[in-house]
Length: 240
Image: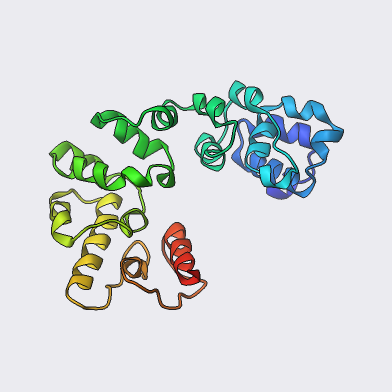
């Protein structure tokens, strides 16, 4: 199927991309291979898929292109687009594509439901500064713990730079089973090992995730199993 898509022109691909994620992948790749095409065929910028591709590929252009109105007419890959453009001049318009991004941008909420919406819809890197406060808020209620256990968040990344001890996370043992609990148990076990002057445990989210809580990180195999974002965070620590 992907090989067939490669033979389509950008306009046809863009029409398909509103319903076919693979087609949007090809649109993005083609835009990055030849950014000048949007100047030679300016009508392409009126297509939402092209607008999405441009917003995800701004570094391929000499100057930012304003495609906000077109993007908002049919937003695609909202979470990715808003993450990539969070610090751009266009973000004030783009955030209207998602209520939870808008909340975080304008006035971070304090009520539980809105916070949960942000944690679900917004990339974790954008609410990193609130991670510990929000985690504590949710750990302290049965509803919050139920929500956390289903939330797919790489907690080792979010909590590695926080003032935190393993007893602070003791309530994770009262959570139901789920991907969220697994991530937090990795944090708990890593902190406990550090506090007892032991090497970090082999973690479930990523075998080396526990090293994020230690002063230095050992060499990590390039092809390692586990969460990709944790893997990237480990390599960034290696380069510091």
